[in-house]
Image 1 (spheres, rainbow over the protein chains, first blue to last red):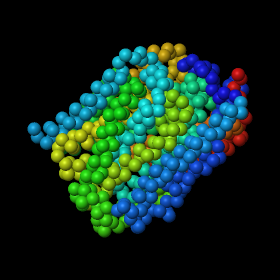
Image 2 (cartoon, each protein chain N blue to C red):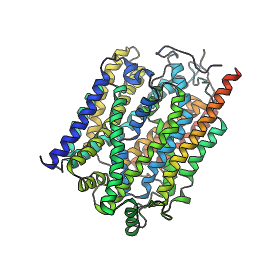
Image 3 (cartoon, chains in turn green, cyan):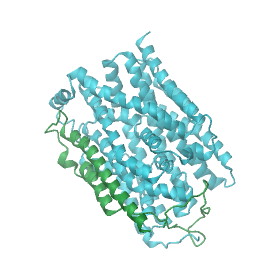
Image 4 (cartoon, each protein chain N blue to C red):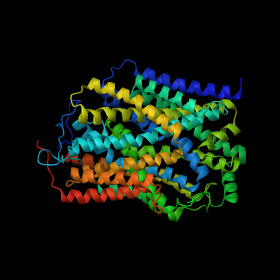
Length: 103
Length: 477
């Protein structure tokens, strides 16, 4: 089932109304693909490394290449985070390909 | 020529080149509303990358990040983490938003709310909060240009005239072109910005200490606590770091312009690939930090940390080089400011004024009203920049506390079948009210937590509970 269809540039959805009561709607169901669990877990890794674990790496020693440890940690995780998202991209595109073959 | 004449001329040439590119990009294209605001929805990966990068590197990262490295120390590292994590978030939410945008012909963030929840007042409220959050962000850019011109003129030109000139140029620039022009000026701006950051990030520690390593060694010796959190502050510790990084990384794509930029992509896949590559761009920030940290030892005691980068550049390099850095900085302020002002003006006309006050307006009339709003918003931000000062980072965080309140509505709207309009509205109103209350009563951070983050949690909770309690009314097809 294709998720999107071609359309004209101007909006086709009905003009919204008040929506508090029976006169309108308060919810248009939209069909979007949920991200796969694998991609979500890969996305969680940089959040743990760069944000939630701050008290483990926020220190100056040992200095690496002359940089304080916390700064060096974050720079390293910019690169590693990008690699995680590269892996997530592969997971998602592999799934998309599989889905379109099954149709 | 005097040093100030040399540096000012250089800045002028760079800004003029940028404006010329902007004008050229606007020629030969018919400017209807869709073309003016979303560039005809035809941006490929390269132009998209530039547009999004154009919004990431603002004066905030140039002067604000170095300013906080100078005045706050360790807490400035949050900027590096949040920009990287913002792209992780974008990987999951932008492609579905793009698909829906194409399906329903959406151009703006508030179109999303009005399509999904069918209520023009909710959509209008989203616009209002978005526009209000833009104002400190716009004020930030204008303040930045004021700082650049007054330091580059060796304090010969006051900040106020400098800010007036920059707003006038900005408005002219936006009028002439629109979003496509802005994307192309980003090319010049980004090349200059990266070159400037790397050259001063390596050059300045080298001139004063013989290298980056020796500079950090000296800083650790003289200020042992400056480089970790809470650094030179008392209340910006680890709790603040975690809550602020979450607030800003979740909120990054809630900025109406960033959200709207997603609609200009050629495909959802473009957006995903951007999310993989863009974090690498954040490494440039490390060089900006090096400059701010060097300035702690070389030019101590400045009244405002935001002056530190340019003050130390002025002290370390010849005037023409100060001009190059200042010119890069001025474009770094003007390109994003153009994007903000364009987005806010279009939101006001198309998503707030027309649906609520004048449903009969034609697209042409909306375009005229949007242009009037460009001028109005420029003037409001200019007045605020002149009469109300704050640090650049402080201004940005205020804006973030506002826009991140859209996050529950967007994510629940995409992925939760049970979410309802009253739920999202109640959550958002509670979140925005909490932010306003905590900010105005100077309670940010509250017990070490970022006020915007606390408001976001409350917002999520209320949106979920109220959605459960209200019936789902599905739109008749």
